[in-house]
Image 1 (cartoon, rainbow, N blue to C red):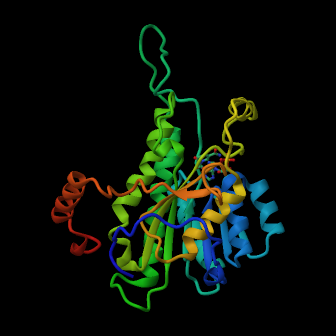
Image 2: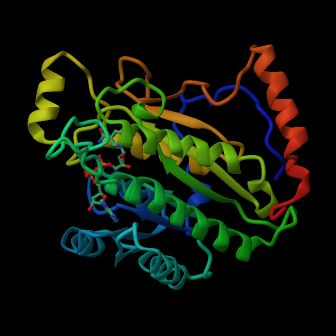
Image 3: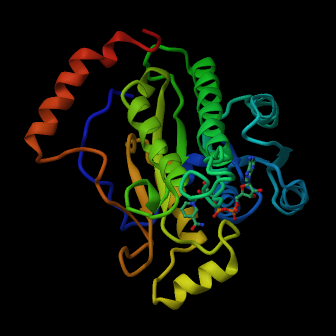
Length: 307
Ligand SMILES: NC(=O)c1ccc[n+]([C@@H]2O[C@H](COP(=O)([O-])OP(=O)(O)OC[C@H]3O[C@@H](n4cnc5c(N)ncnc54)[C@H](O)[C@@H]3O)[C@@H](O)[C@H]2O)c1
């Protein structure tokens, strides 16, 4: 495993070969429904043991019964203690004790009090920031615990003995497109790219990789059926949960993929339903390249993990 280098966009036109994932263990937060469930199903099909962390225990337990190799742990990702227990139980669920892959998928979308004009007696109302609590704080807890386990398993010195590990953060079209009226959700999804950019140059110390998967509209429970119907009614094509599942397998099965964002998109834009928009580096923009180089001089990855 080497430090981060830009090698151009990921080829997303071939079916991933998942054989190297067989027998490994993964955690999927928010894995009981929607896109999370699709990631779980794709991982199980690739022979991965999956620990599902979700607040929805009814659906989580149903999946555990249905899918061999899965274990459900009730977990609110906004709670540090819940996530500590999730990772401990995932490690116990793994025959080797190792956790190889973590998909930080749990996320919510709510009406945004940061945006709305409201207030009693002429006073603004304090906005509810629960979207940040789950989407950002919860994901930072997941990130901290993923790195803790990866470092515990692989040490802090790059070597050929280190086994591949990967953290996958879940962004959105709202992580790079303008989406009006939801500043809190949009900030939370841009944040996924920020976490990835911060870690992608040091993850190699512990044999790690960090990537982002950003879905376009996918019909799940995150928005109401009415909202999805009205968007679809405008002729907007959605992406699918199945393509999201394959995208995850593409990222996890290819050890060369680090520091990337893949966009799960409508098939009209990508033949397999996902693509690398190549947004995470500034290839060809000399000024930004120069600034990035200076930034690396100021905060060099060679300083190690904890400096
Ligand atoms: N569906 C889309 O169009 C779309 C687009 C872009 C990004 N995303 C992102 O994909 C991820 C999954 O979304 P989805 O569409 O499958 O949503 P969903 O609402 O269908 O499923 C979300 C799952 O997360 C669980 N969950 C919610 N809060 C939790 C918490 N605090 N702790 C643990 N589990 C929790 C829910 O119980 C549910 O199982 C989210 O991060 C979302 O922002 C979705």
